[in-house]
Image 1 (cartoon, rainbow, N blue to C red):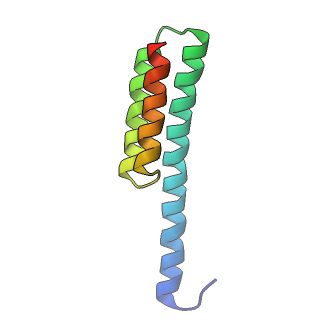
Image 2 (image 1 turned 90 degrees about the vertical axis):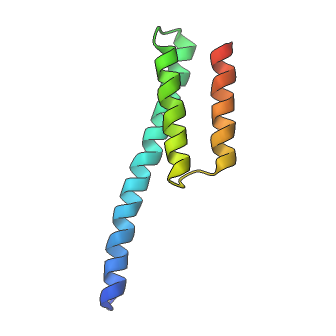
Image 3 (image 1 turned 60 degrees about the vertical axis):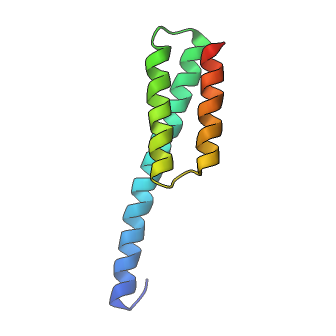
Length: 84
């Protein structure tokens, strides 16, 4: 643990940001997995889950959690999977 006051504050801030970012990234992954599972099982609400997954990917990209290329790749794969 740091001794300098500003460093102590920085550690606390980093821990809060890490928790927030981890939750956001986990929510994105969960949304994508829910869509994939629904598509595999042939559920009725695939279109709704698709929209939620796309929104989650876009939100993660806007927060800087994933790069733009990964967001585009994930969205493209989900769109192709939806069309099948």
